[in-house]
Length: 479
Ligand code: TXE
Image (cartoon, rainbow, N blue to C red; front, side):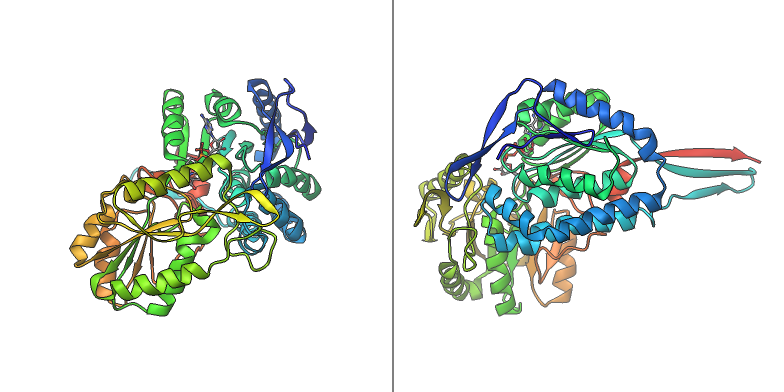
């Protein structure tokens, strides 16, 4: 199935008629083509957005809210169709797309549809000077949203929904590896009555389409989620034009387990935080540190549980782990397993590609647990972004804190303990934007979301996102 760009409420072929193949990771087959849009396509999308801005930014909050909530409802009505499309494009189990990805995309629209009606700005009376200041929060204009392949519609809408709610018009690009649900979203937006040009979706490669968006002088803000190298490149391109940037980048998150935790809960959640979505979530706890007295027990129990995970075709209900997103990504993950072996890591389970009967050319890999001799080895420092975790013991709080913080990333951290004082001490010192204690990936959409160090700049979520997508203007009136 070929997909097209969504510009000004209509579907268009790319102007130069350039196309790229779209692969189904579960069987390795090309199942459609997508536009490889260039500067002209982005310009066309920008012009549509610019023309729609005046009216959309003046649309009442109630009406904006109603349209966004309608999009949310239509996503819910089309849950099965969207979940199947997401799974076919990405390789993730349909059950996961149905339980997490698509419901969350719907929640993103509902949440920001509601949030905008509660968003307010401040006023400051200049006491003794007979003046009052009030702050306006005005939409920026045309903004760019660029998203990755791991949680395709989930992350695409996490940016688009607040941008639209705040009154901006959007030029958006999903990952070229997983464009399908973004394409389907265009149709839903029309059905929900989103005015033409308010949202424009252009498809194509990062170096062509993405680059044209970030270089566009009049796209004044960019919200990006993806790799750290790409984020750094975007920052360089955007800086001379003084664009506003929100960058959510990679992670190498520690999962720190103390002996006093609720063991069974920790074990079950750690399997999930290691391998959910084939380990392709920026929040996965890929470095597991276990307190020495329970290390051997954990190692035995964890490996036994991981061995029970069923790798299979994404449409089969018993599948826990589907296919990795692409052939190049599979190769990158396999390369890291080899690096671990070269650095004297011990593969406790997994480590091999799997052939799934009937889908021999799919990109399947066993969930892999590696015992590492040191926290400084490459597999403990570099983001692998696949079904691979490392384990190693620690002896003291100070030691584990140092190891946890000794990476270039700082997205999230998970802590398992029932000791309140230790919880407080550690969660305040961990270098991360998000700390989960005795849980993982529990999300309240009002909370700030993002990372420190090489994991990015800026925060998404709640009013933080609405602040990002608006400019503050102070008006001072003397009376
Ligand atoms: O990401 P890219 P890739 C990590 C993970 C992964 C690595 C690379 O480690 O192995 O990043 O993944 C667009 N101008 N994460 O190569 O390239 C691109 O088209 C503008 C972490 O897939 O960063 C896509 O839409 N845009 C991550 C988006 O950027 C450009 C999720 C992300 O792609 C561009 C995914 C350019 N010059 C990967 N180049 C997370 N934090 O969740 C690329 N793009």
